Amino acid sequence: MELEAQWWTGQLAADIHQALRYKELKLPSYKGQSPQLHLRRYFADLIAIVSNRFRLCPAARHLAVYLLDLFMDRYDISVQQLHVVALSCLLLASKFEEKEDSVPKLEQLNSLGCMTNMNLVLTKQNLLHMELLLLETFQWNLCLPTAAHFIDYYLSIAVHETDLHDGWPMVCLEKTKLYMAKYADYFLEVSLQDHAFLNYAPSLVATACVASSRIILRLSPTWPTRLHHLTAYSWDFLVPCIERLLIAHDNDVKEANKQKGQHAQSAQHTVFQSPAPTPQQASVQQHIPQYLQAHQPSLQYHHQTSQQQNCQQILSANHTTSYPLQTCPAALQSSVQARGHGQTGAAVSLAVPLEVKPCVSVSYNRSYQERGPYHNVQNGGRMAVLFLPGAE
Image: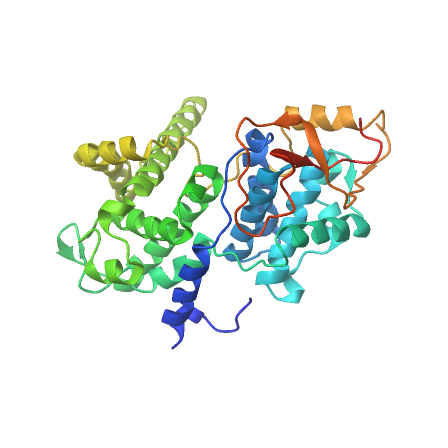
């Protein structure tokens, strides 16, 4: 799907956008029922770090996380296998979205800190088996739209010379466009970190990222007619998703201020003082709570009707992922050690068979209703589990 030209600037942009909107209507349902859902943030961060390491495009990164979400939602997977599943999803997504030269190589993946620290080694056969299982699960269809596929098309008209900044004409249109792209990219990464955003259509998430960026930049009107017509989303329809994004941003600002305060206390004996926040940073910090307070009745109404929890976590604007590439949560390390069967010195080679067996230990009260192209996954209302050879 890698395109030589920027499709959103071409003559077929409207047709491509319409095709993507049609495809997102047929996306498989997401239940959020993975037994390893608490580890989802770590593996989403892992994919983000590896994709940044190899400079993969946002579409590949978001597609990889989406494939991982769908696969975890339908299989009970061990921690060892989750690593190979996550990297296989990234490989498939990069092969689908990137040029061949940009696809990570096996040797490069094995040299990653998360692999060496956990004493894991991927083999070519491992990846081939897992890629085949993934492709068969998705019926060889990887054309699954994500928010990253829509964002550039919406950004093409996100800022216009007729927009006002704090009620005044913009001084520099190009600079405002750069800030708009930066904030939209930030909010796009925010949506990637919380599986709750899978409850929204990808085009709606991308639209909410643009709207949230306009709020941060204090552009008016907040939701101009041109964006309403292009995205086909009204302001009221966007409010629940915008609320999640803005609260996540507000939490990031508070966390950044907290870390800055701790840093200032540790350096209180130095003769230099920490620089004060720039006017833009100060305005951003003050703007979010004011916006939430001003729109509290509307936001509270949509919050109650949708019954969705607020997003309390995510990346900061100049973020690093919550789990550095060289480290791993203690729960993952202990689980891998427990499944290693005493292999402390030797590397654990991940052998992933194509056989899928019903999971006896993980069942659900409600029967899983098959939707989309996953007719081979459900087995008697239970999830499927992938077994390592010799694993108990």
